Image 1: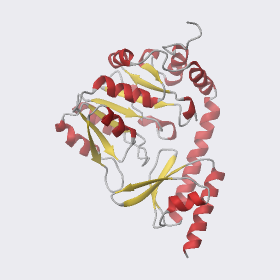
Image 2: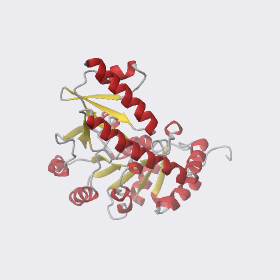
Image 3: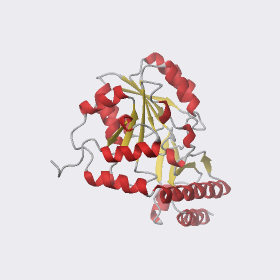
Image 4: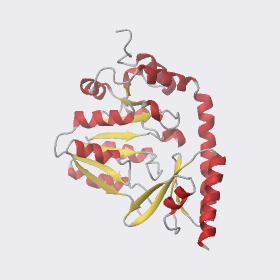
Length: 300
């Protein structure tokens, strides 16, 4: 048995508890936050149950809803991709079983104000899952983490994939009250988080000061790149993630950048094209900007 990973990830949970300032009993580790999302759907959904989420948002929400044969209903964002909580509250008459809030939102980068999420929680008994995968790049004061003991129907998801750069290790965690924590323990498989990933999580936490220096550099690069794109005529939506969501009159921007060795993510929404551009080091963003300028020059 000593050769197997700790099924409770006790050492890592204690380190996270110290780092986050929440009790370790409220923390559940997962094989990525995506596994925890899957387990929450598995535990709380029945066929035909309603799941609400803003649109656009993380594509896996709808995929998991389909796996569990739920009725996935998209609440549209405004034209400026502001996520209007009044629109979500208006849909509560659909009696949702789960409500998903991604903040900062993927792919738009919009951060939902904490007060808006509290308004929703006061009005619903649905399980409200707040996905904070990109929280480290944003105003962390808007996190819902410190509200889990106040609202029994609140769950917060976090990950080591983004700010900590451990996407390949598949390591995430859930912060929830005792009741939700016990429910998830009943449906998860044993040894679901391997020993190497647990160890990498501990190393990452020990290097947090260095990692968050990199986060601050990404924030500065995000501001630099946003301003530069706006000067080139791009529409750049406010983002608190490690990416920018943009639109442009340049046709087939994604394909043309790919030809120049730069990969960005394309989205087609209501017949219009949008792009999500991940922010890396300032030197990388300067290179991306140079390639965009090349395309603009080619169009003239």
